Amino acid sequence: MKDDFITYQAQTTPHPLALEVSYAEGSYIYDTNNKAYLDFVAGVSACSLGHRHPRVINAIKAQLEKYLHVMVYGEYAQEPAVKLSKLLAKNLPKSLNKTYLVNSGTEAIEGALKLARRATGRTEIIAAHKAYHGNTMGSLSLMDFEERTAPFKPLIEDVNFIEFNNEEHLSKISDKTACVILETIQGGAGFILPKNDYLKKVKDRCKTVGALLILDEIQPGFGRTGTLFGFQNFNVVPDIVVMGKGMGGGLPIGAFTASNSLMDLLSDNPKLGHITTFGGNPVIAASALATLQEITETNLMQEALKKEKLFRKLLKHPLISEIRGSGLMLAPILPSAEIASEVILACQEKGLILFWLLFENKALRISPPLTISEEEIKKGCGIIIDILNSVKSNNKSC
Image (cartoon, rainbow, N blue to C red; front, side):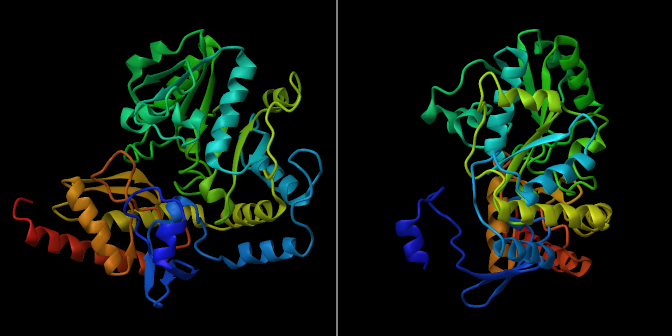
């Protein structure tokens, strides 16, 4: 299978991990040799409830017995999508009450940008340095990493950048600005948290000049930081919130949510202001609804903070300078990119899945399922510490 994977399936890097997957269950992925891998990544934060959570599987099976795709998004009333949108509104601030369901986080970003320009009549978009919002052309335009963007230029115009957490840059937000788009917690940059009411100050500046604030919750959303959405920790309510990844219980979905008055702008002048064939797919919406119900009806969000404390307690080592992030979105920082890669690859050999971050190459990505047990955390952290001890003994410079 590995040879066919390389030969026939387009790759994202010259050297993919190429683990041959047989099945997955709970916090584990199993390869075709039936070797178990404890999953500390959860599909890059996508499998909020682990692999094949019973509530999610039952919801999918029940919907499969009723109907699959029947009509393009927004024309027919389909129960899973309606219930999902209603439950989101119930769990969000009152001003965020209408949701547009799409196929991925990056498509949700595209829709949110269109909505901001449509609502304000302005063109300037302000994003943050070291931001990552996806890889479609609009989302890619929000990235200032020349190495990644140069081969695909020209990107969309009138995008400018500010430094995350730098209050002096807020003056760049002006009456020409349609929107400021920020990750609530910067992901690819190294799980950077906002400081000193930064997000609230950005929102206040946006309100002053008539711009909209878009917060990207694709990674921190759906309980990962102890609240349903990360912004609920930071005394701010965005004009538009974007979500994806952990929303779908392991199936592909994205969404952006705003007020009724804002979202209705996409339905007229012009009509079909944003359209998607498979957005709100009933099977995927059923999976997402079951995921949201499980997260909001249990104590998984509160447990995420307790589990964070356990990770921080166990991951103490001379090679770990700090652990960035919040809840179950954590990034231990190592001395170099080389050591980080060595640890990630060695951990996979020992049956533990870790991964890289996009820009912060000294980090280990830890974003396990919210359902991970304390015993599984202890097991995985023990593997990391053992590998770090081996790295230390083999690298005298460390």
